[in-house]
Length: 148
Image (cartoon, helix red, strand yellow):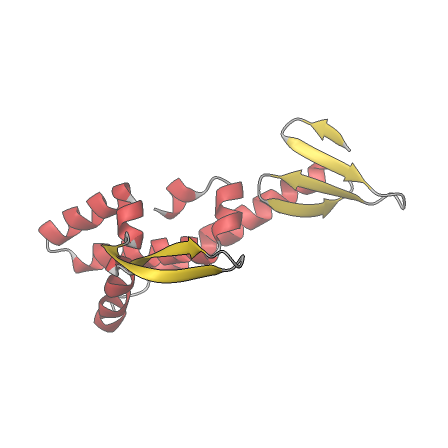
């Protein structure tokens, strides 16, 4: 195993190598191949993002996504039993919603609500759920700013 720049490269006995870059593994023989694959993934995500964000406004989708991002579930506590087991039970507190964890997104959605801009709200929701689907790839390629 060796370190080259920000890549960790593991060489197998048969000559093949695995390049570790952030959260994804890419099979490659040279660093140029890694860069071209990274560019290919970036272009594909950018294409998918623009395809999603250029869809027309869909009221049903907006009404379906908004509760998903604002839904709060009850927190669970656990108790270690003497027998070595663990017992889970709900507490009186409610947990955070997906929106509570993303304060910048929450502020942008609140601004869109104040401006009565349903299309912008839906696009923010579409972009967020797209990020959840391809999270590891987007994080590893630092594409959060492009999607939002």
